[in-house]
Structure formats: structure tokens, C-alpha cells
Amino acid sequence: MTFTAPDPNFRTRIAESFARQTAMQTLGIRLESVEPGKVTLAMPFAAHLSQQHGFVHAGVITTGLDSACGYAAFTLMAADAAVLSIEFKVNLLAPAKGDSFVMRGEVIKPGRTITVCEGKAYALTGGSEKLIATMSATMMTVTGRSDVQG
Image (cartoon, rainbow, N blue to C red; front, side, top):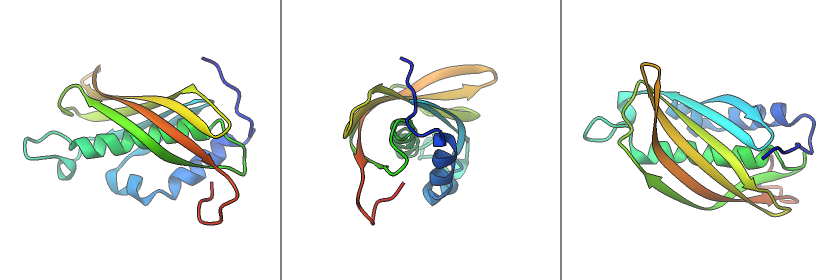
């Protein structure tokens, strides 16, 4: 689907918001690309984020997918809005084993208050991509709250 962002400065707004997410900095996740209704995040493998078998922990992959979906929804919100996750489901399809990882969030159905997104996480090794997780997420548009700002 092709969407149009209501805020012409959505890329700057997304980048500034993402830069304030210290959790993303801690995990080494960076903003790779931003389009209306689509966001891609990337992360190198880091041993300190792995679980007992050496795979990146499922919680780390889930966190990246949540942010990718949230920011995908955020691209389609007004300049004065903020976004919060209200629900998601993750399917872990394969161990998170790779040189790096990509998390892609995409809006399936935007709405005035509720936006439905889909996320996919891939492990990259040598030039190949392997799908390792999917997410179905529901995001909420928040306006008028001083404790939740874009």
C-alpha cells in the first residue's frame, strides 16, 4: 500500500524521536530508512545481547520489531501526535543467528486513533536474509497529553 504522510517533516520528527530512545542506543539499533507507513531498523550482532545458546535474545528482537512498527505508524500521524503500543504478538520462526539483523515495520491499516502494523525481522549472514520473526501490532495515536509527546 502507498500512504501519504500528513506531516511533511515526518522524517525529521521520526529521527528526533528515535534519537531520544536510549533503549535503542543501548541495543545498538539504528534507524535505517523511513518512508510513509514503513520503517526499517538495523542492528549488528552483539554477544552481550545473546541468550545461553549464543542467539540474540528474543526480547531484543521483539523490542526492535515493536519500535519498527511504532515508528511506521508514527509516520502517518499528525505533527502534534505521539505513538504508543497497545498490543502485539510475535512469532519466533528461527533462532536469531547472524552477522546483523533488520527489523521492518509496515502499516497495514491506518486509523484516526488505532493503527495496525506488521513487522518482520531478518538475520543477515553473508548476503542472505533469513526471516526469523514476525509481529502483528496495534498502535495508538496519542494527542493532548503532556506526559506523552512525539
